[in-house]
Image (tube, rainbow, N blue to C red; front, side, top):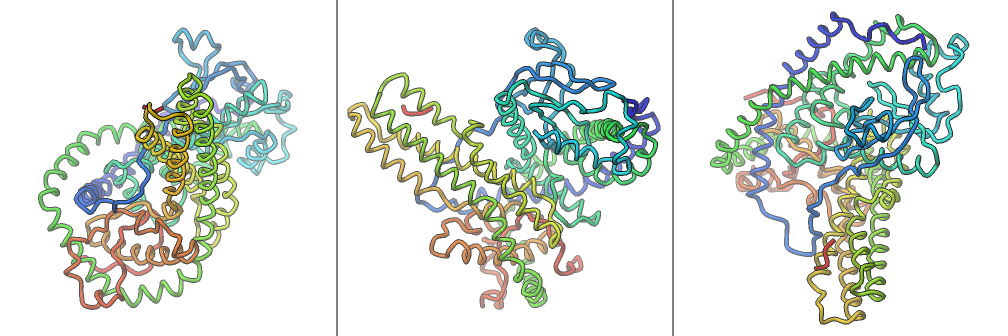
Length: 584
């Protein structure tokens, strides 16, 4: 195309990037170490705390979310100059996309032409929309397409395109042969992008929770108090995204003017340069975290040994500090909440609830339809192959991309509403919330399916006739649908803090915010109908062991509740204190 730089990165540029990565790790790892201690304490506290109350609850599905493998022929825009060439594409179960020169090359175990992890990509199926995005990358060259070579980039219309766009990587342009193939690839790629992006958010491992908290605190120390999509992906990918965002303005200013070409060719060259920078940063971040792994494992083992015997004392100490902090900041904080939070909270709660409520209603409808089909099949063929096939299909519903698309689509439709939070609140984490709502829908479906199959397995016996078995399944159906909880509060209740003065201080403030959110949720959903408020969705409160040591002012009901923090990133409201048989 004429816009590709002769060498994406020279030796000096690579050395500069290595220095930037080393600086990032040097500043980040101490924060990570501190959060590991907090995360281990939180896990032990949860293990030793009161368990969930007895009653009707959905079973937790033991099946983990997975990327469904998909493969087939596509054409890809590649080469220099770029042109459309036939390939054979494979989406692996680990979320990695690979492409080969032809199908036989893949089947014979040959080397792929290229590959990428799907983390951070956005899929577009409109050529016009993609061209607008490409033009926006180099706005100073808009309208200057006449200087491009005759075989202009994407000049020929593409019938069934699949454009994978990434903010820091080379774009991937594919095209399917039919609309049906395009649809199948769209579902597969979107599922892979979501599951790759939320791998840390779904993890309950102490190290994962500590890492996310450490990233948030590190960015706050850098002056970033907003919320965005930087934490999507693995630990190395997250650190790479953090550094790329920091370096992007300087990179654009220093390198964009020197790129040859014009219009879309120049934009294409810019994505190639970004891809080279991203690859170098990712390699450095991966190496740094890999080198830290033995120390992290040793630290986690040591923390487990030292914290567990003294956990009661640590929690009581934390409760005492939290109690004093609540008393000290109660007045200013309450005034700030009334002035800054209360007027805005109804709007925020309504927006976030609408993000998930339609998806969860779609889950309920889809689940009911699946159970009805199963009951109908039982009446028709109680012991045949078709019944077993229906049971298997029902068990696979949470992982069926086509079926679950009706639930996922509802979350996608909320993107516009979420965008309205950007200007007043600086909220830029729309993709994370959409993915979170979709993950929640999938997990709820998996839990409901697992519950139905186990209850059905317990109540059905060989002595029942078809009608009796169907009647029992109908009772199980009603019970499962009744057990579906109100999960809307989950999107507002993720995360935790540290056993440090600064961490406890943030916990206190976040606890007060969560009290306000809880009150607003009850008012919005209806106090008598809420089966899962924030109290039920959050982790076990830290200070249970030290409840008897609260101050007199707290006993009078004026202090903030003892709640662990959420994952929402907020700018500090007050200055911190000084340091002192029927299974599928």
